[in-house]
Amino acid sequence: MTATATAIPGHGRVRLRRGLEVVFWYVLLIFLAVITVFPFVWMLLTSLKGPTDAIFSVPPQFLPGHPTLDNYKNVLDQLPVPTFFVNSITVGVAVTALNVLVAALAAYPLAKLKFFGREAIFYLLLGTIIVPAQLTYIPSFVLAVNVFHYYDSLPALILPNLASAFNIFLLRQAFRGVPNELIDAARMDGASELRIWWSVLLPIIRPSLAAVAIFTFVTSWNDFLWPSLMLHTRDHMTLPVGLVALQGFFASDFRSIAAGVTMTVVPILIFFLIFQRQFVRGLAGAVKG
Amino acid sequence: MTERRSITPYLFLIPALALVATFVLYPIAAVVYYSFTNYDIVTPPTWIGLGNYQHLLRDPTFWKALTNSVVYLVATPIVIGLSVLLAIVVNRQLRGIQIFRALYFVPAVSGSIAIGISWRWLFERNGMLNSALISLGILKEPVQWLTNPDFVLPIAIALTVWAGVGYYAVIFLAGLQNIPEELYDAAQIDGCNSIQKHWHVSLPGLRPQIVFVAVISSLAALKVFDEIYVLTNHTGGVLESGTTIVFYLWRQAFNLSHAGYASAIAIALLLVTLVFSIFLVRGLERGTAAA
Image (cartoon, rainbow over all chains, first blue to last red; front, side, top):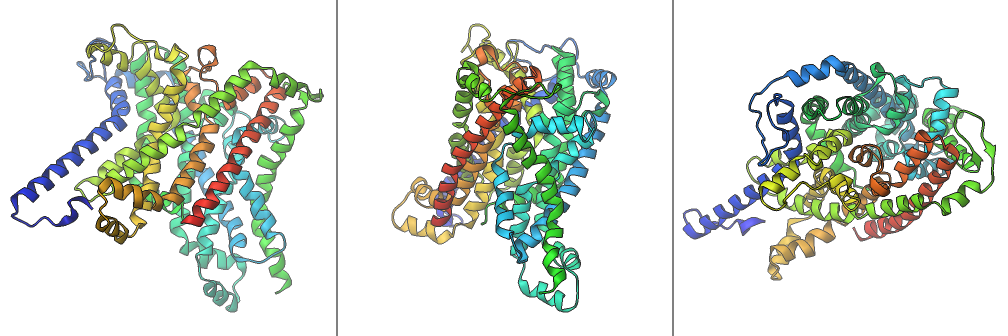
């Protein structure tokens, strides 16, 4: 694509042009990277600033002159950040495992079995994708208080998030890609539909399951509005809700707020680095049919 | 076909259908009912007919919120344009390109609250932006970015775009890698320079991805809440300058306990989303037909 790849080794001018082009692309890539990560780096550096380091100054001071971990200690003394973290993990893992299970169960008959009402059920589920979740929050709030009695507890964040029409839709696409002969062969051997689903189909669509699971986890991890409606006791808060509480608590103490933000961002970044490949594959596969 | 197999499909579907019925379908029906009532969540609703809707039509804050939500949709074309460009930039074999692709994805996974807070401090009166602009001599004194009604919504939109570009670029990058190399070669033979090649080959080739991103990013734009909540310190901004439909719904329902009125706002949100989706689905059909 670039420089049409016809650079003959040793041909000085072509080589120079190619070299300049590479430099140009790296300058652009680095410039874009700076724009992207600047707020995060700035948060990290600010969280390490001591009380005598300026927050606002002309010209701006980036590096902490007297680096310290006191801001982190300060945040951890005032707010149970490790508890927020455990709560976020608990909710994220429960929602992801159960949501993927429910979606994989529902997607199989929609993709591979013939039965009365299949189209109607599929389009009903598909239609719920465009319904904004916030529309349901008032009745869900009433249900949480009057029916399920899980207000201010973690099940309030888990139960309403166990069915995702989007995940059902994506897994249905994955099941449709599996050849029918495999299923027929298993039926000949006398396997039940549940057994076919579990031992034949799920292993085949594992990459799709992984992609759906990762996106469900990140969405749950970053979810804010519904958790903020449900959680009031500090010890029950998830990280985003706790972060807003922290911002209110420390008001204008930007060093401590920056420490809190850094503590919430780092775990999900590590998660992303570990599963980067699956993220990319999942996103790339989302637009195929 | 055996008897057993004929009920099996429904057994697989029961968990999903029960959950959708409880947490999506029932709430929609309940919201429709509440929207015709006076309701504060604590005491039982009382029927008032079209009262909430009549109030809605005369409520300037509602119209402001609706306008802001529609304005927010400009995030969609901007984010598509920038993420297609970014995908073209990162679609080349350079050492370390994987590291750059990963870096651009960081805002998408960091969470809207965390990045909202960092942006808020960027734009604070005593924030980084003011001190940088003053030291460059562009400003004489600090600007109150977030308390100026002209700036709140553009800053929120910029935040949404900034956080989304790396994410959507991954989708476009996959699309670019599916376009056959011969098409670019043919365009070159026809005398296209590299910009013309992208215009005549990349853009048409990316059509399914563009339609997909248009759908998901505009549905997200119509639902925006977190960014506004954090940037305006849950006020909605001076003169409601940052108030969106979902933000107004939240305030009416959960701050002011006007759940009946908020339900009417929710129905308005549903109608806007439906109308918009119909346009988008038409686009989607055309997009996939062309692909």
